[in-house]
Amino acid sequence: MISKRNAKAVSAALLMMGTFAAFSQEIPSLKNTFKNDFGIGTALNNGQIEERDPKMTEMIVRQFNRATPENVMKSALIHPKWDTYDFVVPDKLIEFGKKHNIKINGHTLIWHSQLPSFIRGIHSKDSIQTFFTNHIQTVAGRYKDNIFSWDVVNEALNEDGTLRKTVFLDYLGEGYLAEAFRLTQQAAPNVELYYNDYNNEQPAKRAGCISLIKKIQASGARIDGVGIQGHWHVGKVPLKDIEESILQYAALGLKVMFTELDIEVLPRNFQGADVNQRVASNPDLNPYTAGLPDNVQQQLAADYEALFKLFLKHKDKVTRVTFWGVNDGNSWLNGWPVRGRTNYPLLFDRENQPKPAFYKVIALKK
Image (tube, rainbow, N blue to C red; front, side):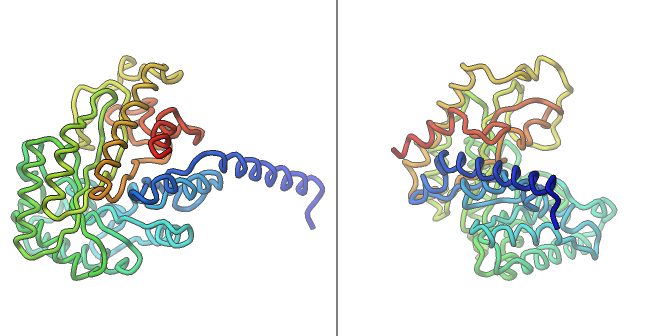
């Protein structure tokens, strides 16, 4: 039997959850607002996948109909040893998607970063080819009926549009790109296949991305779409380049999506999203620890409004907009490129409350 003390605690918890549910119903839903335009996604971390916080789960389910795993499907985690795979949390992600009617985008099969540590000890083409082939066939094959799409290859380009020097390029040559798509198509024939990168809306990198895509298409491998990550800076969102990229990628017969959207508000002296770049901590680089000034908040709102106007203008080409994090507290930008900063790049604050940017975006459909 439940004691009176425990009964009171349970009642209080249920009341609080009920109050939250009632309050959350008053907040408009992004996925419903744009249901006739494009999918609305978010990146999920382990705690969110495992539903450790009921309030967070409710908020995610209300706002989003697409989800990308932040880390758990990257090869270092899902394939930690040569002959060992860890599918525990990725399987939970699949169940999360089924339970809440959220389509899952797999992220990512081939990436030069966050590789398993054993790769550093491999120095032969045959061994790299074996890892490459087995990894794609095993991971893509396992989820072939439960994933909507895959970021097959991630961030294969330098800023000038040339191919990035990676272990795959070194040992397998540039044909590894088309081969990754061919192998994924074989393992998961009904899944959409994407190339994903940052800054590929910039002219030089865009040209390299278009060249890469054409070579994949010419090989006979299937590629269905291109992801523009969308890691931009407040007041500097390159709208003209973004629009031109939408048009040029769509002209290749591809779907276009914005896959990791956030708008950084803190100072940084370089552009992009190379996770290997780091900057030493400095109080001048973390100016908003007590909150975001109103003028910056309003600029952030104006930037998101302009972006979504552009997405809506090209909704016949744009199929998904995914935010890289649920709220400001979850954002990777709190720890990169400077550790321990207080960043504000998303539509929801650290308490899951909508920011002015959220309401500017919602208002575009009213």
